[in-house]
Image (cartoon, rainbow, N blue to C red; front, side):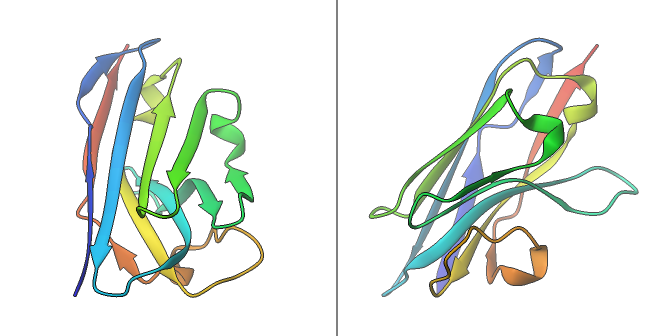
Length: 125
């Protein structure tokens, strides 16, 4: 049984910073990519940032320069530092983990095997 648990979402004001955390646990679990996705009502789930086991990193254009993903591969933990938050960053944020090893960070939702329940981030203007 693999569990992915994210935390840290809350209500903040525009311009504030927030740090999300994610931990993946399970017997003999190893993860190639871990990623942060978000989904706002009526919109598709999108990859915000992902990081591969070898350090390859992806950021969506909308968050480049504002968000930073970091990861402890050995401990299957991951963080998303979000700075200069905007109202359009409001969404439910999900942590995801991909089993197996690939050369680049995965960015499509269907590539990921395990998902957390989500943590709500709301940015007020």
